[in-house]
Image (cartoon, rainbow, N blue to C red; front, side):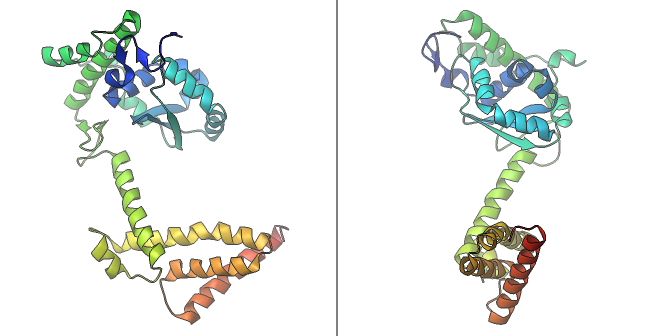
Length: 286
């Protein structure tokens, strides 16, 4: 490890060198086996980096648990590649990794090749012109140059650059799957906020507040809010806190039905309480 100030490489700040997150993720991918070891690397893939947060796809539950257990060690190993603290957080999620690996094979393995323009090369080299740590700067610079070449090869093969995050992806549309999921989650959060403020709000009323809302999204948000309360109600029953359990079950019924009819609310509420009570008794928990 270098003994210089943690967030600098010579006179070049890490923020300047890593201003393009795609260079950062490429460096991490290149060194992933070294960072986590061969076994973990076999079942995981660093898929995305943005604003100091690294997202890793993991396709094995045992590996996921091990990575969570040694999260801080992995974070230290990642940052050691940058002689600093460029990565502040690691988020792990389940998923298939083979498609991601295929997309980011080293360009040397490809039958195709591509060249970067003098302007592109000059821009990349300019990031490292004042670095005192020549060895590290040269290594990171070469990875950045190779990353740019690899991007061009992928673009020739039909990959697209996401209009939102700038990452490359294979498929239709203007944004990648991750960004589509992020936008969907943001939209779902807005729907849920409206429902939480007014549990009996209708689809038509919500549609006026959120552009492009579908009935499916509206009722999905209702179902998710209701299901989120199910475990809470179960815990309250287990604690014999029946008054609070009844209040939470009533809110569950409001989210589930969106009805203001007392008869309907009470019916759904009692059904939930009876179902959870029966389940807990069978499990010997009450």
